[in-house]
Image (cartoon, rainbow, N blue to C red; front, side, top):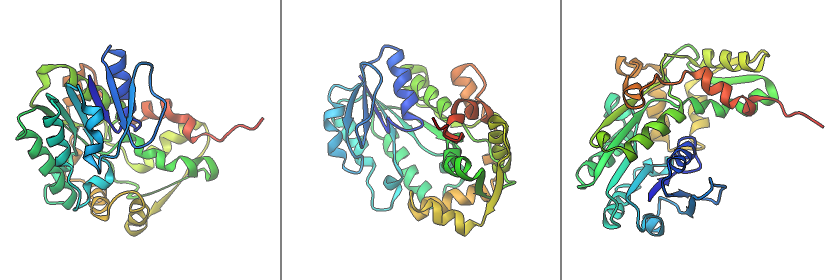
Length: 284
């Protein structure tokens, strides 16, 4: 049995489905009740209170560990989850980490994530670490303003990075959970192209078949919006990357293709699959 944390999110949801399709017994963990694929057991739990994971981990052979924003806060203890997994008899953990652990090792949130990676490597468990860059699904933050105002607001409109499709992250995670060949691997996950926020807005407009106006935010405006959902340290670390990516953050990784045997999906593929989120509701 495989436990998937963050099972209702942009990575966890397709990962849960992929594992179920592969015939695996899956326990999906999220804070709130949610519809699950047939045969998938759901256990509500908050990772900020690791003992709540105990029922989910009973009988598990592997764990996909996705840490929510509040578990990046300085007072959080996400390494307790790894200790609990080991004590519960889990043999393998696949950790969703961050590209910034390698590219911005001195950022406060990256130091915290590095400590989680180190704890996993020292745990005695089989492990793999996924280090994606920015997610294509972050564009969903623009969905309401596109639907209601045909506008996208974002900082650093002409600065691009090779954002990755969460479905690709999920497929790599599934491979790491199921295939011993990937044990001990650290995978840098990117998309196939550097793309700017302005270019993303153009891709959304093209898929909609109607114009979308791009409005560039200041860093301060962007941080104010981000800190409604994540700690300030994580917001600053993210803004540092997307404002001035360094050469390592601009590099297009071959790891998705190395694991999956195909190129990563481009942003316009993600848009095509998710365009309903940006479309105006039809009346009647």
